Image (cartoon, rainbow over the protein chains, first blue to last red):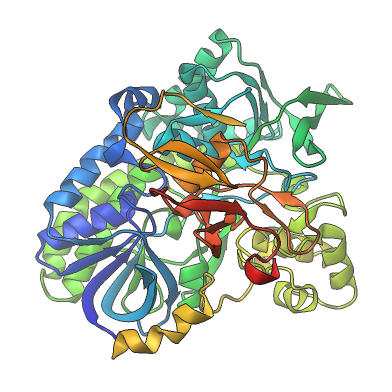
Length: 467
Length: 98
């Protein structure tokens, strides 16, 4: 076995940064593993190197990330950038890939802060070049000031499509349309949660501001959209969608060589699944997440999960949950006692409680209909890597391959380079729908190390690193 | 098709994309660079041969696998450009068998 570390934090977004800063300032020995070249995670990606004009364009929320990075850099936490984690087990052994060298390190305590990813929603034509996630496009804007050259269409649900459209408006990028896929009936389901949501901060007023600015800027926003399709041969040439008004439905087409899609975010659970953490189906968030207590503890001793990787709460809640988990680690290592933990965590618990009050409203407003979760068209490619269609998966279930893992063994669905990250949710949904059972009766694919591809040479050199 | 919002300054490196040299900003990811240089697609599917391009930009979709400095299966969204870097599309599984 390789070197041993007291506290290893996986991820350097708001959750990881705040956990690391808090723990290091309490005197713990902290090592932060980050896939990215600089701290900030996806939400504050590239924050340390963003030129001033781009910072202004991205808005005050993004600039807040600089404060977190500054506090982190001032702490004694060790930072390992461009370090991939390919394994985590219940004994807190972590397989890492750093400077091209694979090794395994031992941690006394682990805080997983690997964040969220955009929810993969398969639709016809989603593999065509020119189709990209809207969050991905935002990463291009944050890190490189790169934007669609000939305009774009933004389609999906949730606050992010609005935010990206608003940022593009300010950057002078033509947004041909924003297509909102939340069913209109969601409004009624969300309305009762509005009073509480208004207490949570300025989430609602910011959403309204973006919408008003987009209206003023001449960007059309269409509501009640369904039936998304990307059309083209070697790349996207047009986007087609259905528009239901007063009982009549019609198809519309917009010519575009760029389509940005976003259907909310879901926790990245590959690491916590491979570590044996217990996961549950979250009905509000429509995704699986690890089960944690208010300090981030999982059922696996010594492994905590914070921020969006423990369930979607957003960047501000991630900061507080990161601090709480760090306090709990310090308590478990006897650096502070229970009383000190509770006292120092008091404010964070209060803030989290307040901040999360917006969630029931957002979850109801942007709740995905079954037609997005379960790809309706048999021809839709669900597994992009192995090119397995929804029809093939349905057929497999009908032949008796009745759970996601059996579908995987039978069809190789989820066995390509992304290892099921892009197809696992939809496969579970299709299996559940075919079996006429709720999706909570199932779990997504079993995850085994290495959870990201390693070359044979890297694995072969593993032993040498330990000598 | 993508473009940069700001002009190139002096802080650039030279990379070679499919045989052609380009000046590109220091710190940019290979995925961002090839999107700006309108490569169209970055890899072909090993199953059908269909063209694919970057999707997630955060390392979870593996659609941006390219051959960088002769090594196949490199996630272009996770690697920053470097002086003299040779960037090629990945055909199928890449490498000798590609």
